[in-house]
Amino acid sequence: MKIVKIDDDIYEFLRQQSDFEETINTVLRRFLKVPVVSNPPATANGDKTGGSPVMRLIGERSFVVRNATDKVLRILSAAHNRVGEKGFSPVLDLSGRHRKWFGRSADEIEASGTNTKPQQIPGTTYWVMTNAANEQKRMMVKKALQVLGYLSDEIEAVAKAIF
Image (cartoon, rainbow, N blue to C red; front, top):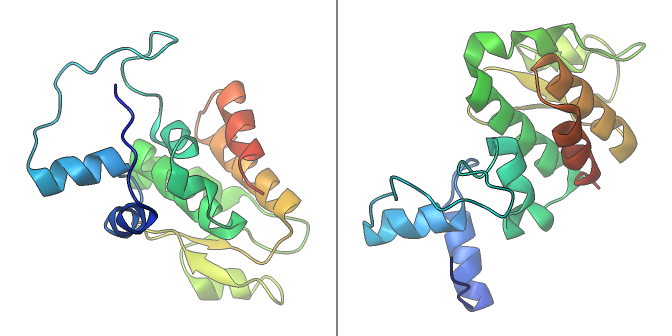
């Protein structure tokens, strides 16, 4: 893999063209019509897949500069893409003492308390409460990833990235 320096405005343009699951590299491949490499090189730890979609997000420059709410939404979207619509449903059972964290609609979350500010998880039919301190957002994501079957070291790495 080579490192290429690009101007900030070009990088920002490419970032804006990306979906939640796409890396800048994927966007460039799409624009340049370069096919995906069928056998990607192994990473330093021998992983040829680049990790799960959630772990790949942490390494993206666009992920680092986002606010905590955007990070939570991107993480949950990536997790949903990994487990699918039905596989994501266990998060619906997660909640705080008073407020519901996840729901199938904004109304469902709003009915559980005041100032919940629900947002739809991109690319899904699920909603998440976003009006919480960053520490609570980390806890929500950790619990969601636990019920979705992520490994504990991966969960911890993702949680540390939310600030």
